Amino acid sequence: MGHEDLFGFFVSLGGFSGIALIIWTSMMGKIARIKAEAQARQMTAAPDAGVAAELKALRQQIAEMQSTGHQFDISFDEALNRMESRVNRLETKSAATTGSVAEELPTLRNGHSL
Image 1 (cartoon, rainbow, N blue to C red):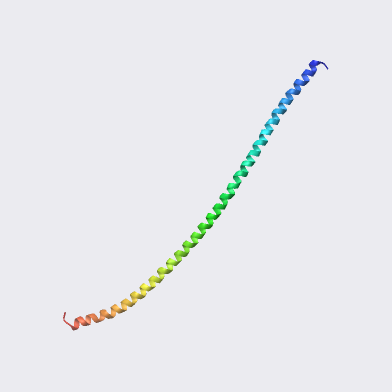
Image 2 (cartoon, rainbow, N blue to C red):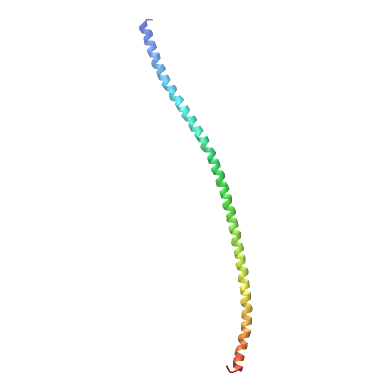
């Protein structure tokens, strides 16, 4: 083997090593990108868990407020029903009292000259 053959061999080996180096650096870049994306997912996963917990707490508060609102509606309806029954009783008493007075008034008017 002469120097020329040896030189050709090293040139070929250098070309293949250059291609191998390019492939290796490309793969290392992809690995670094995949690791960075995994870290980004982990970092965004933690706030998502916090947001989910906050949403759950807000849903519970809304449910409690709705329950309280319904209780106030029921109490208000009950109070209105009590007031309505009281007014009906007063109207009934008033009608009975007014009716007896109204029956007496014409008699008084007719009995006396005004």
